Image 1 (tube, rainbow, N blue to C red):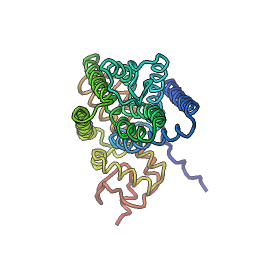
Image 2 (cartoon, rainbow, N blue to C red):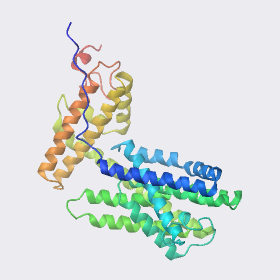
Image 3 (cartoon, helix red, strand yellow):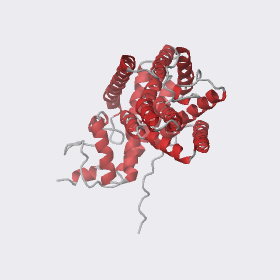
Image 4 (cartoon, helix red, strand yellow):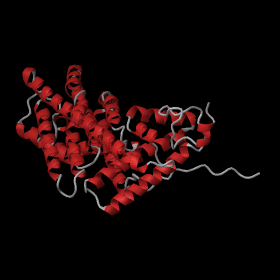
Length: 387
């Protein structure tokens, strides 16, 4: 009896690989953050450090869920997201160590300064200096929002440990005033730089470099405003929150607009690659809808298995990258050699991923298909067998 043919294996090594040295640097930042937490625990005792860590972690899951929700169309590897979070934490530790060693708050944000919970106004020079250092260090790395969340979490740990030395009232005021909104605003500040980097990357040569500078200036200005709000009450504090909220709304609008731009690329460029083994018109409909993408991954997991769900995720990412590469090529923002290489890698990955999904006959029809539709994820025999 002949042995059954081997199941298809999805090879993603050529596509979206993160350089090892880059991950090693981020890992070192994570280690620095852990050592700093140990130092905080040694200086104040394990109980205050644990309480501060738990309070600092409270707003992180919600904000992390928002970041992941906005990252659904072109999701980054989860390991890389975690490494970026650790990098932000490491940056916070470095600025805290330097500021406390020099006994100055000019180069740190208020939470990481020598006296992080004193309810006094922060001068413009100290607020600006801390913003310049923090945003410059954070803005040089991709996935700025995750870096901002890691940075804010460590800053809150330092501030909350110090607050406990002044009693429960100081702890509550610090958590309410900085602990809840600090991570949100730090993610906002770094995302301003990230938007500038994204805009520059979408332009050929140095045409878009000005956007990086604009994003950095906006991040520093907003961070300075937030740092200077320490000790403020009433109308002054309300004005600060109003400005930051307006900036957050602008960023969210830009993110949604960019998502629609990418969907438009998918519907414009992918039809030229229509092929029974690569993509069909109904599959393009699925790729252009976040809801249908999610249903597609769920269908693959429930009907074929975990490997198929992972393959479906890789297929969706490769299709998005293919559409974006076509757009860059149409605008003259890439070389012909780079475009051909990216195109061929994307198409090869899409074929391999589709083969993994259709290796087994599904238990149910894909939710994005009508009864007579064709899809690269369903074998022709399976379609003919349906009644």
